[in-house]
Length: 285
Ligand SMILES: Nc1ncnc2c1ncn2[C@@H]1O[C@H](COP(=O)(O)OP(=O)(O)OP(=O)(O)O)[C@@H](O)[C@H]1O
Ligand SMILES: [Mg+2]
Image (tube, rainbow, N blue to C red; front, side, top):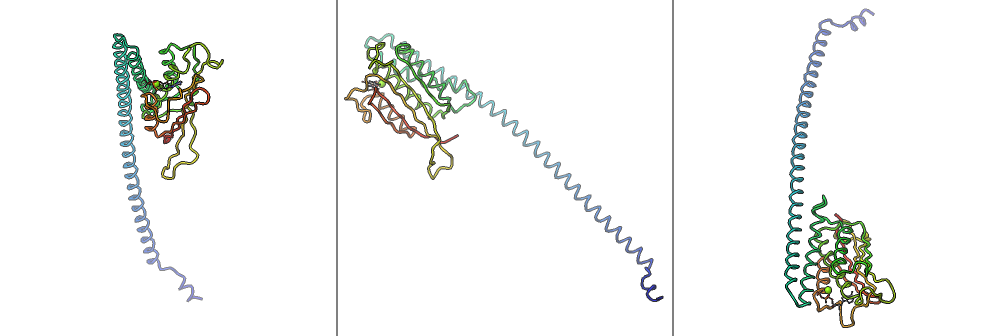
């Protein structure tokens, strides 16, 4: 009994040593966590500095982007003004010409330039410096042509354009195609102007429809949109000697070249009046 009691008794020296070791360990742990805390604080300060720097860089980028947008709009404004000056010069020049064919050629050149000027006008007036609101653009282009040909009232315009915007590189060829086809309809489809062809209201219909491509080509990740541009009139129809697939005159040649430029195909329906359908696709923005 005495022996076991002796075994259980703790040597006071040993106890003190253990306490001091424990204290040392505790203070080692304390100083380690203090160092970790300091490192953490340092890291947080570094991160905060990096965030502040990035924010400042972002703000600078935003300011410079805003300046560039304003600059681009100013450039678009100037391009539009220059094109308007060219178109007015053509007008002035045509006033001195007697030959009606030459006058007509000047007039059509003026309208082609006007169609491009409208694109730059649209770019100037909107926040988007690269894409054109097609509904607004085609509507103003068609109204301009109807007024220019004095057919407002004699021929009805039916413009149906989906709410789409197109890149300027596609919008310009598109606008020029509309210009050629609507000009042709106004010039040739209704030779007797006010009087009706086939007893129906004389009409030129311009449609631009968009739909998402069902099957995107395998090599492209982005989905594409497919567009159908139709210019149809219920007039007298194309003369039999005009072959729209192999045109010999500038206007229809331009339609062909511009359609190819946007990767489109042209179909012509001459069963009732004249209808041109151009189908093309564009990578989604
Ligand atoms: N919508 C239409 N209705 C009836 N005839 C048309 C129509 N569009 C074109 N044509 C006929 O097709 C011809 C060819 O048209 P195209 O636009 O190529 O030439 P253009 O209008 O005569 O001259 P330009 O080269 O200045 O456009 C026209 O001369 C006209 O006879
Ligand atoms: Mg023509």
